[in-house]
Length: 236
Image 1 (tube, helix red, strand yellow):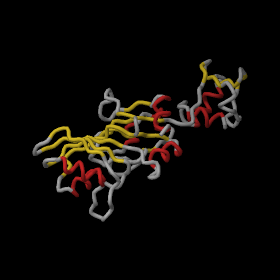
Image 2 (cartoon, rainbow, N blue to C red):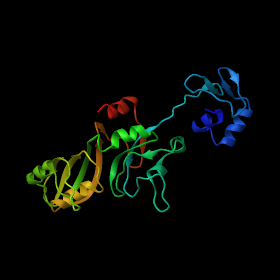
Image 3 (cartoon, rainbow, N blue to C red):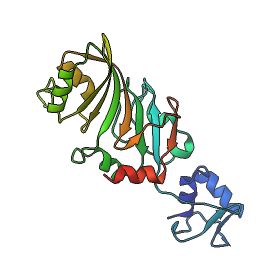
Image 4 (cartoon, rainbow, N blue to C red):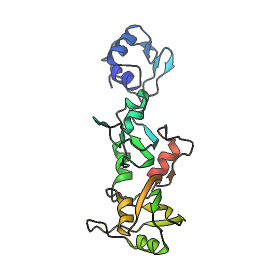
């Protein structure tokens, strides 16, 4: 990898900023001053320092975002704020993307990464990674609904959903539920309840696989996943 690309990727500024930094003699590779951006280094083997501090290169980032309503799950959009707009430069410079999507009016756990294999492992239909949601629903959610969801319901386009686990938290004119599904059809949770004559009022994703939303994260904030969390997601 070129030295200027490595430093730019690690947040030391634009290529122009990096060039100026290197010309100052502040960049060393294995103890030797390097002033040419085209110099090639191996991040896994060479010791790179800037102002005496080691530069630890990492090719991928893995983020957990508590997505707020009104923000879309996309990398860019001309009209709406995207989840990538919520990231600081230190993370946005990796050119990450959302893992799957949450509807504009849905909040909660959304993973963001620049690792395509990681995303595929979680989102591939063949993987059947469970996702758990909390919803408020207009109408009385019943034990009969639980049975129907477990058997699979027929959506408006004729598709029959895979078995889903419905947990009723509160019954009433406005019911509160948790629903775990293993697929990700368009507006699936909302369409499943429409199939049984009810309407989802609010929706929040709580869990992907065995990873739960960090309750310390306020809406619109995020943090990096720990290595154990990444391993847990990929272990299924």
